[in-house]
Structure formats: C-alpha cells, structure tokens
Image (cartoon, rainbow, N blue to C red; front, side, top):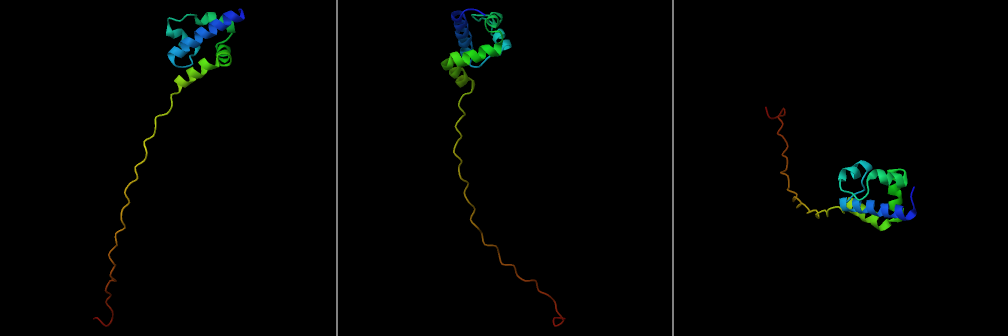
Length: 107
C-alpha cells in the first residue's frame, strides 16, 4: 500500500494531471495522456483500484476536486431574453348577410 506521505504525493500528482486535462479521467484516459509523473499501474499499487483513488482525491483534496469538477462542467451559456411578438390587432369580420331564400311568394 505505501506510506501515507507517498500516497499523498501520488494523489497530488494525479489530481494535477486531471486538473490540466480539465476533467476526471478514467484509468484508460489517464494512460492515454502520455507524459504523466506517475504511471497508472503505480497508482493502482498504492490504492488498489482507480475508483478508490478518485474517492481519496475527492475526500483528501477537496479544493482540487472542486476545481476539476468546475472545469468539467462549465456554467451554462446565458439565455437571451425572449422578445415578445407583437400582438395582432383584432380585425372586424364582415357581417354575414343572410342568404336570400326563394319562397312561395317569390315565384
């Protein structure tokens, strides 16, 4: 497992890489970054699993975790205010004239 001091340094190093990338990295994504101070396998030796290491970063380095999460989910773009549509003025409909009926008297 390693000493607490070593584990703390590993946590800081991994957190800094994630901070540079701007998101919480999975183990595979961390390996794909390339030039990292601590390889993923060595971090696994210290913590046993990647998810346990992420939990420890969240609990032991809350400021770094909050910064990573803030970069991961930027604030939403402001929504422009809705411009009200001009209302149509009610137009008077022409009066309907009754149809002229032919009756018995009109023949």
